[in-house]
Image 1 (spheres, rainbow, N blue to C red):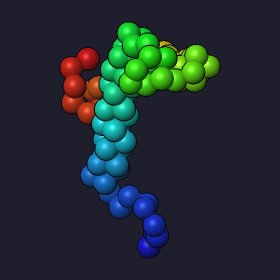
Image 2: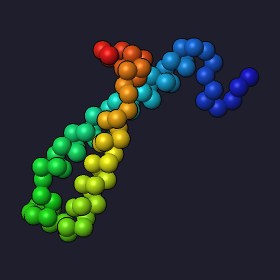
Image 3: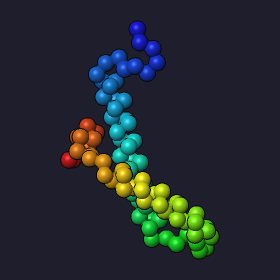
Image 4: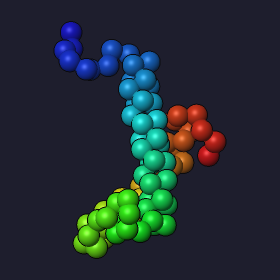
Length: 85
């Protein structure tokens, strides 16, 4: 008998993969929304008062992450989680 999180049947495989892919699409959408907001905001002024270096670091990190996540081919992911392709 397998131990741990080894799936016992196809339903468990589908559930595990589906949950991971659904979480991925949620995070991808949240990152994209945050990137859009950050692009329009000046974090150096009230109420944020960040340094220029901190603003650049945050915006660069989110921009790179958004670009990488946006580049992922969603064809099969959407098909597996039931979204239109």
